[in-house]
Image 1 (cartoon, rainbow, N blue to C red):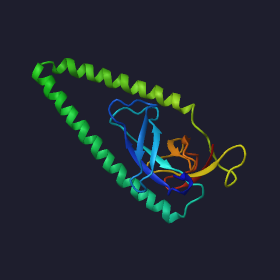
Image 2: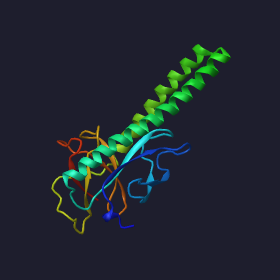
Image 3: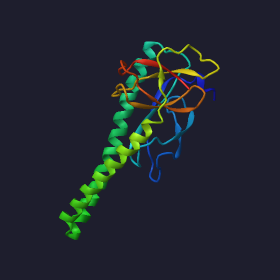
Image 4: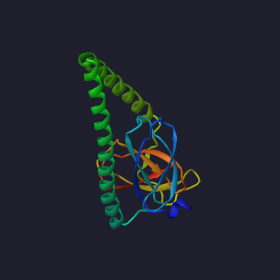
Length: 193
């Protein structure tokens, strides 16, 4: 498909079992039917949800952004419910097993250690990812030049300056960008790659 003609959109992606950061997933935009190849970003494990968006070659009217923000809220709620149900089911199964074997206290101590180690590991992954971010352009010329391509993104709900976004450029390239200072959810900004 011609990526530049694809409408800007947010797509929530749940990381499947067995996938790790860097694993390529096939993701279909439910609104357009366009299929993307997307690498799982750093810091995401099976069962977690990340959000990607498709960038636009030109700035979009506010009505398009408003529609995109509304659909992102519904998609995030749906993804959160799915992850919550899976987590509750896994937690209940683990609790029944621990109680059945009589190892409640030992298992709780081990679980707390594992969660702490996991959070520490995620923090290290996030720190490593920060060095690979592309800086957004605040005064890039429209359309790009020989040095790169310029496109537009929207700050998604819940994001703030410094947040990392996974964006598919109009040419189909996956880019991690950082929300610039002064931007809030629903704001559009340019990125040069």
